[in-house]
Length: 284
Image (cartoon, rainbow, N blue to C red):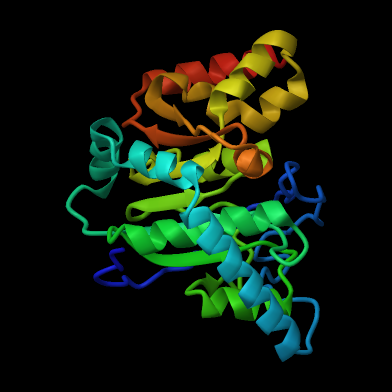
């Protein structure tokens, strides 16, 4: 499989807004994390809570990850996913995001604990296989507040840069970026969209995450004000996105990837502001 021809420099912007992190609910323990204050109020630097290394633990985890990567690579699910990505229609969308660039960064948010969660291991294995397969995926970064020191060292050995700053999902896409966010909470997707709402940054994003169509269906059924608040940017983007549903094919990968989709975003116009305001009015 092709390796990346070059690895661009990854910039790590500092977050400046307050929010609450919530880990994915599917296949991983769901947790709420403390509010992160603005940079003027509190340092947003991050590091694993454990401070001691454990070589035996790391070796065991690395072997486990290699097993998961091999099993996934040999699976019908992965072959089906590759066929989808390499279809003429999807490749056209990927190339639109790339524009004149030769590669895009990959940022992995909310992966959970690869030591304790099987779904997390399958999801990370997929990110690794995609990086190995496609030369247009450049540098890869990862962050989750629950990552341990041993997990961090294994992630680095697998080619990831573990972020030392909690970006709170608000990375600005100053260049083409693939955000790999399977089974994250709605707020995390919405914060990402909010951070890239202006300046034509949305069309530099490829998002792998939960189906937005499911959120829209849920909203149409209940019109809950809390749901609107946590999905307001997703709801407003309905006319400006293209979604490709992932087919899980096998029960082995259902828990890790069920309900996941690829998302691409077009260039938004002034009309989107009216859509956005309309979505907010429903909650009042």
